[in-house]
Amino acid sequence: MQAEYRQRREQLMSKIGNGIAIFRSAPTAVMHNDVEYAFRQDSDFYYLTGFNEAQAVAVLAPSHPEHRFVLFVQPKDREQEVWSGYRCGVEAAKQVYGADEAYPISELDEKLPQYLESCDRIYYHLGRDRTFNDKILNLWQRLMRTYPKRGTGPIAIEDTGPILHSMRLIKSQSELELMHKAADIAVEAHNHAMEFTQPGRYEYEIQAEIEHIFRLRGANGPAYPSIVASGVNACVLHYIENNRQIQDKELLLIDAGCAYGYYNSDITRTWPVGGKFTPEQKTLYEIVLEAQKQAIAQVQPGNPYKLIHDTAVRVLTEGLVELGILKGEIDKLIEEEKYKPYYMHRTGHWLGLDVHDVGVYQHGEDKPQILQPGQVLTVEPGLYIVPDTKLAEDQPQTDPRWVGIGIRIEDDVLVTATGHEVLTAGVPKEVADLER
Image (cartoon, rainbow, N blue to C red; front, side, top):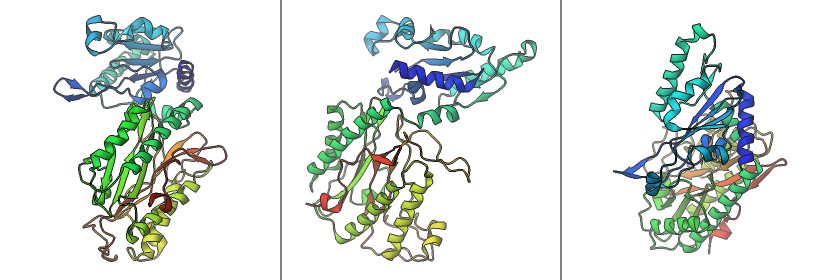
């Protein structure tokens, strides 16, 4: 992988000319008192370095005669390492991670200005670390004050996102191998959850079974807090309490994925707890399933990304009109977004190092993002008949027999040269396969 990290750095440096790019590692986060959460590296930082320690800074300086890639890291410290784990250290940062030069993080304030004095632009993303943001901004202002004397130095700060995130949007073969593995593990976990589900169990029992499979198969753990939502809980999009007892004749919605080698999967399935859909559940489910199938069919290279959502919205709206839940002309209902009380989210998102991965969805109003081979995205339409939903005055009151039903179906889809590949197709979603 080091060769690939190097290639990514070279690609980025080729795009920034005489600029210098600065990346900060993720901060550590406190769970409670003096106990920290498990560390998870910033995705941009990891994408370029593979370095998985806190308190680190990476500098890319394409015009520097010797030090084009510089790392500032925590030095080796035997006493600290006994408590909190081994550190790479300064020398190994060069030997293992390919840095041209490395320094202790304590020397950042002294060394960093030397690299910036001759660049013409700083590339840096203003993130959540306000202290470090202020450090970069203050350094830039200081260099600007002395610019008239030298005639050199950074005259602007530009966000790294537009350049780097367009790179991250197209996955390499090694990235896709990790994403296939993350998908395969999540597929196994969902299939096991289907077999384990029965009336009387608690949502957290299902969650435990799923996350057991994640760790048992070598994943880092859940990619996000697992959603195990029974009955009306399925109408809460990000329900994570997972503490209700599951009842017969309800639906169970599970939205769960795992992280493997820093790459993520994201699957949602909805199935009948007792083994049979009620007529109302089945009717709504088949509308969502048809919306997903038609949306996935639009995952083709050359298609605009927004076509996926537009396709799902049309199928869902048509279904709601057919059932009498909405009334009106289809195009007008879509234009006025009258479907939103029942379908309030988008039909998917990019997937990769982050669950909601980086990359734009639209380049301005008239220039859509075009699907390209190597992109990975989710397709996840749903319908949620939420109790006490506020409806427009021109819409009928929802028939009580639909209320409290929540359904979502989600797969991870790779754009290929000739169409698409559903990475998570191993989890059943046809009605005949879900009923028993």
